[in-house]
Length: 254
Ligand code: CIR
Image 1 (cartoon, rainbow, N blue to C red):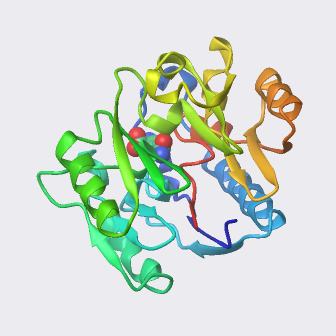
Image 2: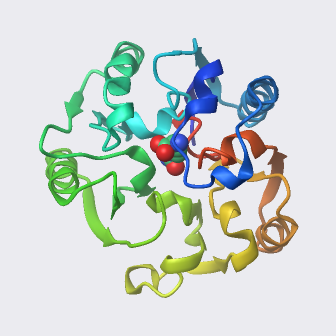
């Protein structure tokens, strides 16, 4: 069960967010705000208390708060983002995280890690080695988790931006999985829902209590999730997709 979520409002500078898909165009910042409102509403509908932080125009990608902390049952780990334009975002989350956690740990240089590369399955955390998260960062996280009776393991990856760009743990041993992760041995034990190639973006769903939030525009994935027995809520993230962001990136949930 998640009781809390933290989100940060998108700023006008979202148009300058990092993207590997410039062909999708720049985000419309007004529409992005409307979509953010709907996202918050969906989280609240799922029974989560949402803390809404003000936009921080200095950091175009700062609405993607998932990347700056890893929130577990026992501790929160403040990350060290691997993208140079995102360094410093992590400092801006500390104060609010301290309201919820007595124990804070930190990923330190030369380690880098972004929360989008960390997938929690109960007390185990899968950590993707992406362009943002290096082996040193992953090792630091595994060591820290170990101190608190939790565990972590490394997942090699090649193509996706973040681990959770292609994976979502939906609970009850069900894993939503796309692209390069479909045949990975480390995910063999899960009951997998395979995301069609033309809907890859929709692998970034989130289970929030009794619902799975699914991005708008991916009917095949939505149907598969519903067939597996989950209730869904559709949230439009079209403007965030333009800067490689999605449903998981937009909140910290704990
Ligand atoms: C970035 O490249 O850092 C942002 N434009 C998107 C971050 C998406 N976050 C995530 O997948 N957890």
